[in-house]
Length: 318
Image: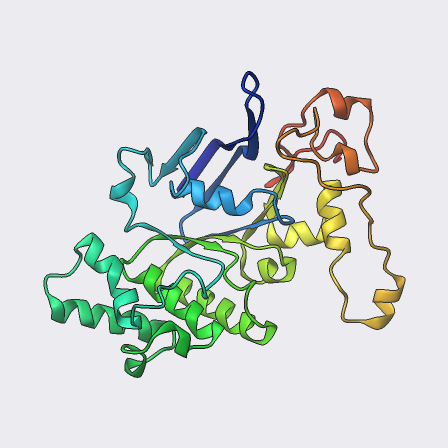
């Protein structure tokens, strides 16, 4: 059963233009997907493709320009989103800026409980806070300390504990390990996996590191310039990538075997990423694609099933 279904989601930001012709930055331009209960959907793409904006728009941290968000069978709107706040949470990218430096760890983790009024008294609140800290590998000694006293990995664990405090079912993980050292990234990823198994959580895991996404995701969606270009099972994506953009991304992954690395031929994309203010007609990727034809400029490719469970938005992906 789908816990979250997104249909035709758009998020446009107004930008400076002429008085008669105002312009819009099309950060998210009509994406759609569903996530099953207990599943992790990875969302990947290069910087500026709109993946973080998509995650925040789903939670109504940004009001959607258009589209429908259905959570557990009920449409989420601006008027009823407060009822879903305790069921949908987010872990932000940078633990250095997402934690209030003037608050202790106990107050940071306990703040969502205070806002949602989930506890009957101070004793229950303190028990809940300690419970969340123990879940993420911290202890009672950390309750009265401040964020600056912790390492980056520990700060991200505090962010995870804060997200878990109200017992959510769905968490948007917005590049939660990209600001951490490589040695710490694996520990935090394993924490996410353990918590998912223990608490039956559902994740939208946003990242640009394809190795990280492969490790944690059941399915992966690839975004380019505000649109989804490919969605499929994680294993299938790495074995049978269909879209030319996905193929280019995978070819750029460093290989640990020196011989294989020397024999590999990365696909080099030509030109720069087009502006989301004035994207190309038809297929957004056509200006950098080696397989482009006249049809690509005239007709937008729709996300369609090219194999069981494998969706691709390319006219020639077969």
